[in-house]
Image: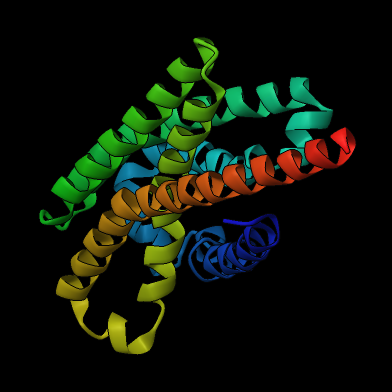
Length: 216
């Protein structure tokens, strides 16, 4: 993903996130709303899951900023550690929430999302602690889409035609978003690698021309 495309994507995703928060989170400000009544059995779990998940969701885009990494490595590391903490807290709690609130068909999806999010983040953390920056970046690209499932699934379910499908549509949308979270990052990494391979021969050819001219 190019520098320009990356910023366009995150800008669009940021607007979509604001829309999702407005549609799904604002009702929780009213204790008498149906949304609040539904999460009443897990309100203490949500008090941990919600802020931690929001922290990870909102901080991660800054980790993909090349300018931030180059100009302020200390801030980059601090935000990265906060992201890891957010994942470590939010991801495991989603399983008991899914078990209590249901539907039962959503529990395996919540488990897969939790394991995928924790595993990719842990491998990314391991890579950077070993000094492998490239692998760290790739595993963080794999990690963040598991957080994006929260936004994309809810945005899709906000479409009236999809929402009318009931529980079947709900579970189908979540599984589809998780499948994309598993495979799309690998496609992005592969395309980046192909672009890097094409750029390398071109750079060597340019260097060779300059060297030849200098020799003349």
